[in-house]
Amino acid sequence: MTSSNSGTEAGTGTDGPPLQRSIGMVQMAFYGLGSMLGAGIYGLIGKAAGEMGNAIWLAFLVSMVAAMLTGLSYASIASRYPKAAGAAYVTQRAYRQSMLTYVVGLAVMCSGLTSVATQSRVVAANLQQLTFLDGVPVTLIALGFLLLLAGIVFRGIRECMWLNIVCTTVEAFGLILVIAVGMSYWGSTDLLETPPPTDGGVGGITALLLMQGAVLTFFSFIGFEDTLNVAEEVKNPRKVLPWGIILAMVAATLIYIAVSITAVSVVPWQELSSAAGPLTEVVVRAAPWFPPVAFLAITIFAVTNTALLNYVTASRLAYGMAQQGLLPRFLRKVHSTRRTPHMAVLVLLALITGLALMGDITQLASATVLLLLLVFAIVNSALVILKLRPGEPTGGFEVPVFVPVLGAIVCSVLLVNRFVTGDWQAPLIAAGILAGILGLYALMRPEHVEEDDLAAVQQAEPAE
Image (cartoon, rainbow, N blue to C red; front, side):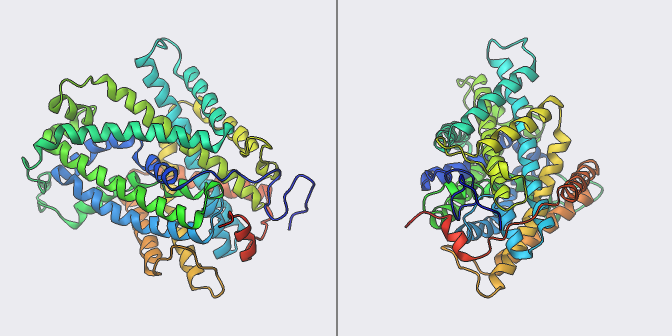
């Protein structure tokens, strides 16, 4: 156990006051939905049309079922162990291997940091087109954006939640607008039409085609990891966290399916797949009165939201891993008035700035997203172990053991599929990141702090 000091609250493992619990059910659902919608869907529709033709909606449905398995596992974990750095915490609790816990935690953190750095440059490039910033270097705008973002994250979780609600509302409005202006086109096309077979293959919807479509759209539903990392700032987390995850996934699925049906109904899938802005093209044809530049503004809100949520997630992950003794102790410091992990916020700002200065890190971001599949497989397996272990606490939301088993299998299959069918650049970078994490672990030799008793978990929860 760690030694106590005058600034540490007994039983909390933090230096300073505990994090502020202010997130309710509505905010949690918006947080999860904001993590899933993102700006990716605005371009993903075109890529999916090239793969699936008019059957894009079916790809989203299949990928939702696949993602929901892991989402339900995370919901169950959230109700059992509502702690920051949730994936790292359950990995240590299940496997009791600090090195594996370290890999899981830093893999998730790397994904978040590369995402924030990438999104900062996307925001900067879009701001150049919309405002008087034309001519100002993209890197300089990106750095200003990161400073503003860090200030909001430092300011408090309430401010982050309200900004998330605004951004999620705007990006959801963009998608709902697409549905509203194009709904009259529904029924005008065959929703099972797929691209013609190549090399003498069999046409129509096949298991292989569905697999390809599901792999492409699977990452549209990732967001449950973000929700788990703010567990210590949620009111009644055993109830709010799992239902927030589920509500967000269901809402995202309905929006994605409706948008995909609308898109192929308004624009032929062949043209949709080659359009620079697929959803912009849909609106241009269905509602020519709507200014296309408005979608550029919506994209800025969507990308800002993604960056914000990933920054919050990464800072809480660093804070939670410091609580477990896997990262330096100073990262678990909590600001006395703002009630945020300010040291983690500042350290991560330096790291993100360094990544942003590197320029295009698309392949690095792809590699870290690939690592998330490995993390999901490990976390699903960890829940299986914990469910079968006698004496483990049950949560407010339990799932049958076959759910995490199938979740681990699906994530493993998707990971293997990516290695077999994709280029080797991202997997090689991912392997390099893993090697770097292991090297850092060997250098630091962090000593894990055991918090496996139920009392320690319960102390992190609010009074009912």
